[in-house]
Image 1 (tube, rainbow, N blue to C red):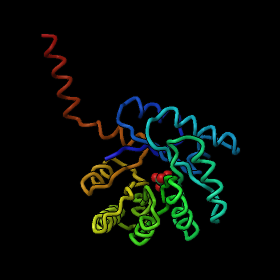
Image 2 (image 1 turned 135 degrees about the horizontal axis):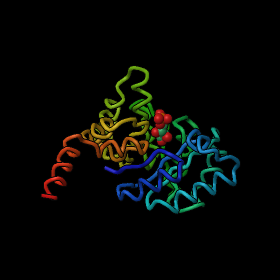
Image 3 (image 1 turned 180 degrees about the vertical axis):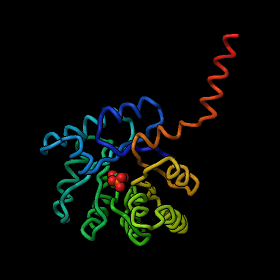
Length: 215
Ligand code: E4P
């Protein structure tokens, strides 16, 4: 399973990359705003800066909601760097844009997916990745992980190559459950990846080994 980090923070991206387990980055307009990145030129430069840190795919989201606007923005984003994946919202115009990009060989990440039907449409349109938001489903008392299970079954039934990119992943158990289900990718904050490291018996055992080594 691939690990993507869900942030536009360069220090955190570098830290995850340095751990040696990072396969890519996802961003969205909210994450860019959180880092104070404003203005088109700065936003484009920031995507390139992210691409220079990581070796894998970097999702950059369009903000247009009409087909022509998405195509224009997406083509400009894709031209920035070979690692860029154009992130497109799951709306009717977005499905058309995903199909267009798929035929042009431009990779896409279909975002804001909350149902199996939406995921099926994204795969039929030729999305490279589909992003079901599991944490936000959990937030409204719906089981986000069962959506990942449903999409896995549907994609396997028909051999769709669209990768399931579990998004809105909030904690280490989300990551473990996604791995058990067979999600292709999880995208999460650095804190969730770092939490996978932790076990009190590891700390106790290491302290004991180090104490015994001095004997
Ligand atoms: C996905 O690509 C989104 O950027 C992200 O995972 C949303 O997560 P949130 O629900 O924690 O904002």
